[in-house]
Length: 207
Image (cartoon, rainbow, N blue to C red; front, side, top):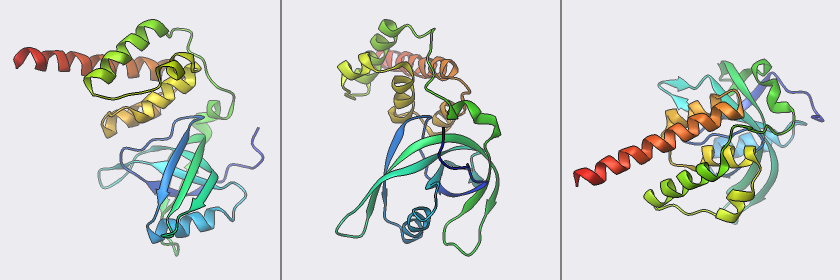
């Protein structure tokens, strides 16, 4: 249970390629003056929420995820390192530009009540096959990870962390964020990995 009421307006942090998935954490460097001001204002509130959202076209995506500032530290150069813990996804109803140097949004939380409950599981996850496919993907992209941690991670932490960190394009990351259930997100994640593997194999044959 939350110890605060979800507000109808929160500050927005538009950031391309960065999505915050349910019950994950996201580290951020804050250095632009407008976002330093945003952080100062947010820390004065009870909820301490920042809405992470991707730019889309000339505006913003319809769906984002709000994270609560759970840790922060200041560098010698005035930059702030913060950690956001995901609270809930939201639908952006309206962007507000007022006296603050950063934008805020009118938020609708109603479509994401499941985010406020405990972690999801995925009974259809075939972990050995999934991990094998992931190993091939990571090798192809010359990426590394802690395989012991990956094999032992709970379903939700494994799938959501991969959805955030793997090098998919912005639209693919947005689709992963908007997947309603963990099972749907895992199925989409598998599809994106398989597509990348097939394309990589085809390119090798052409060389």
